[in-house]
Length: 363
Image (spheres, rainbow, N blue to C red):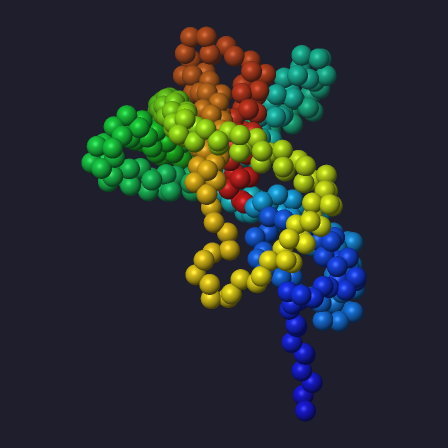
């Protein structure tokens, strides 16, 4: 007869776990996991020992706050490596990495020039990084233009509906899309002679046209971002006026998150004891184990709006840093004489904003 594993017996309402099981239960943090009913006891000593080793080696996720988990270093390291791989595999992430190196080298080269640390080899290396990395980014943009063209076509198709709902926002978004589409096409054509593939007539006109399109796209993006920031602030004020407890709830959630990291063992034990005294929830019960209150829902909405506000503000800062490049290339008054240090610093700021956006996209 085949050997079968005996079924696990749940802890009854009137019974108490033995000392060994209770010790492991006290160590585990159960607050905020949304567990209802009774905790099941291990079946044998081997399982109990494995639980102890997992807890001692921090291989089990410990609950730190409602809805949040603290994972061990090995798990976090693996997740970080996976995100780095995704970043390198995406065209946008690779472009932002190359752009960061390009403008950082430009800024460092200017600082070395000011400090009289420049030598002919370093000057040649800085110039090579600036040219070769710039050509690589132009090649990557050639393949990204197809997606931008598709986005612009969808914007044109949604014109009637979008104009009735948000005229100003739609017009600015359409100008931005058309600007980036025109910039992508002109920039791809101008890449051919720069890479030595083939010559084109009126190369200077094509390059100048690409910078014009880029300038219009950046201006529309900055104005659209400012309008969006203003509207997000209005929505935040409206939510805070309707639900005044959201600010206090945000402060309390932050303070509880800090306190939980300190490891309040007494609170964990009390929570476990209260959970053991509760009767188990029937498996087919129509009532959910947890219910979200109106204030919790409002707090979630406020946090989402604050995240959008932050991202939009950073995008405006990045576009404002980028706008000096087309202005300098088109020789606008006051921008044509900017040094490599100013251009490199502005490029580092916009690259950092782009890197943050690309990194968050890998989560």
